[in-house]
Image: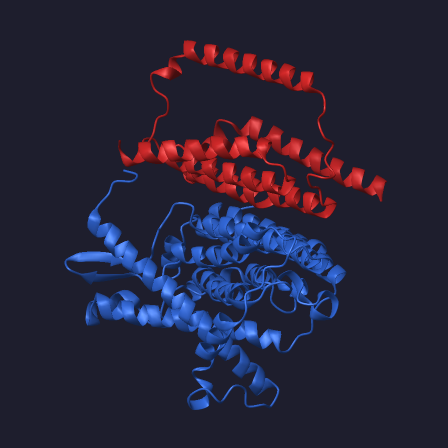
Length: 168
Length: 356
């Protein structure tokens, strides 16, 4: 195995294990910490794909800012295993398990058909993810979707301000 | 080629990492001594003067004292997270040093060794990523203490760091527009030509905003509300003792030194010698000697920033919390936006040869 493959498997296990622990862990604070770990593993994947800008923006925005706000809310509400509603209904668990398993089956079946199975990831080549190339593409070829998404962000921001004003 | 391995490269980077980590630790150690001396001078006292000649071994004595103190982990706290908090604070404090160009290059064993651990494409954004990770050290530690004063201190620290990161980022965008690159190495090299090509001349307002935000990011006075002792006992490290407390205190000094280094690289020409043509001097006295001078000068500039941090701490009183938030959101962010717009307009006019 080359070092890239070792890194790929390590990061994949980290990401999947972290994601599983987000659901499995009892304390919400631990869940958030596992989610941060998952984000870091995904950033590692971006770096393997030579998309450095995407990797660091993922760390700054998701792991750095949004998760801090999550952590804020959970810490202030002081949620823990005692205050969480206990799930008594056994049938709900079974049905959930069956539904989730079927979804997994469908996804696996669908992915088996695609051409992606032969070439899982293109590692080590291409510099489309470097910031200069990304900026050129964003402001020439994809300028319209880029501007539309900025309008979306603006409206979300105004919406947040309006909601917080009404509540206060 | 990414990740192509060359054993000599690993060796040289390893040595560089050890040197950078060790020197930032030693500098942080003596920054604590310097802080007490500066405070003493400003308050007409002598300061530490018992351990060694004029107290020069005081940091060693402090470190020993912290190591020998009893270690207390409070009941009902999450033990793993309680220990993780200070470790994260220390780790994130040290990680910034990886992208800072400490000097140009040295020439040994027929190899040019750059005095920078990693010259990465995203350079300064990496610093931002590490800074935003620094919040977790404080937040996790404060929550794991299971103490409401600690939690309040941690929340204050986190919201302050997030708020000031915005203004810092926007102030930086203006600088990046003038330099056209994110790599710290290239930013420093662009400032080598003349003393007036330093970015502080081009971006005075951007520097001022960046400096204020750096104070806030390091949790230093006048923004040290996270540990306001008259309101919150000790802030986020109330429950900490022994070397875990030492890690938190130490991380603050490493952060100060490294934020000073970032400001030197961004605004004060990095390792550039002012009023001297560096390239000509390098031809005269050789690459290695010029690297020595460069690095010494870099550390001197960073030490000036360390002094500024201390000077402000012992001169200016603490802000109130609402004043802090008003300054961040209502003054610094609009100013930074204005700075960005003006810089962009000037660059556009310049490209258009000043035709409107």
